[in-house]
Length: 166
Image (cartoon, rainbow, N blue to C red; front, top):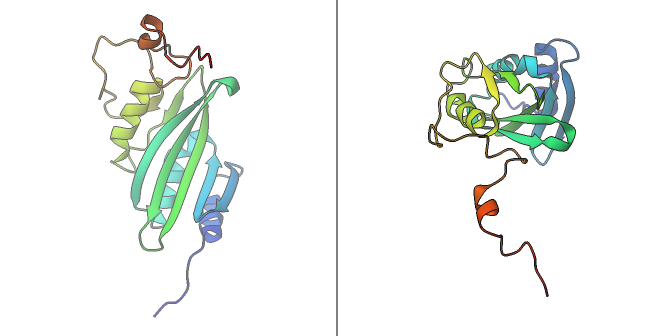
């Protein structure tokens, strides 16, 4: 029986070896999870490398808007059921040109997540087979998850907590 256990440091080392030099810009292992930042152009490569390492459960993908830094951050969460290890891979894309390669070719489950990020943030997932709306009506304009999106309810009706006078 094999008693060796793979560590997050082993996963980091293997991922660095699998990707082009200098494409991994940051890696931190803490709280039982590896967080890796890499060059956005290598998103499918990073996903495929991790899948090949046994991270076969694609749990989530999403985006964060950092308007003060003029960027979006794409996050993909993967899990290895065999090792009980978690990895979050992250990449940054410019807010004024929000494009990143799709991961659907590696994980079919990325489809729904990428469509949602496209609809809510305006991020284009290059190579996605069918970016189409999931939640918003066809007539809706704008990207409601961007931090500069003005909510209509706040324009038409004052927010009760906005002028607290104690």
